[in-house]
Amino acid sequence: MAPAGRPRAKKGILERLESGEVVIGDGSFLISLEKRGYVKAGLWTPEAVIEHPDAVRQLHMEFLRAGSNVMQTFTFSASEDNMESKYFEHVEEAVWAAEVLKENDRPVAVTMCIGPEGDMHDTTPGECAMRLVKAGASIVGVNCCFGPETSLKTMELMKEGLEQAGLKAHLMVQPLGFHTPDCGKEGFVDLPEYPFGLESRVATRWDIQKYAREAYNLGVRYIGGCCGFEPYHIRAIAEELAPERGFLPPASEKHGSWGSGLDMHTKPWVRARARRDYWENLLPASGRPFCPSLSKPDV
Image (cartoon, rainbow, N blue to C red; front, side, top):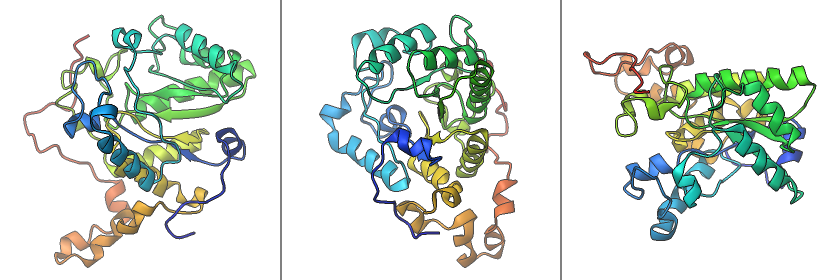
């Protein structure tokens, strides 16, 4: 395996995906920058791009160093119509966007904020994927609203729908960095912990390595994250898929694989944790003895 770094050859996203290459996306901006004091919760408008561009640039750099191949612009909720409703919970709107983008003769990637139940009009994930591909999308998938496990279930349904229709497209997934098995159709916004009490639900780096492997095995080749996905989560994707990619990201220079750096710890019981099976089988405690493991969604 090559040392930490990234290949210099420049290829378009479709060229990369068609060759079977893994493309790693970036992660959380709104929630991460809110925690850092640069975004106001509520409408989640991206005024930090103007007011604090260095903060946005720093987060981009951290995702890049962690292994991201794609840096998305921080423009969520930057238009008045988007402030009124989350885009792309309805396949009809996503289809309109795909049709307009296709006119520019550029690769079209469309992800929807849906779970296994489908969009807000009960259109199934498989049907959503079919309609997007027919509208001109070359890359389809889901982002935000649901955690890794739920999002992968949705991706599986999308893949099945495309296969049954005889359609082909590249698959893309960017879930939350939170565990959300108990949320409703609207996703994590229904949870009583949203948005200021989600820390107990944060996925560990090992959870994300498992997610990355399962996504890859499902046939997904554009793998990233959304709200709650910090740079170390992206690094976990890059490390898990390093055998397929042939190299590690720069951020791995300070991170031993599966806790191997702990073998130098002064405490023997901590040194004993420097192994893969320990972290793969760990059941993390929340430290809150009276907290339930699941919540009841408000909607």
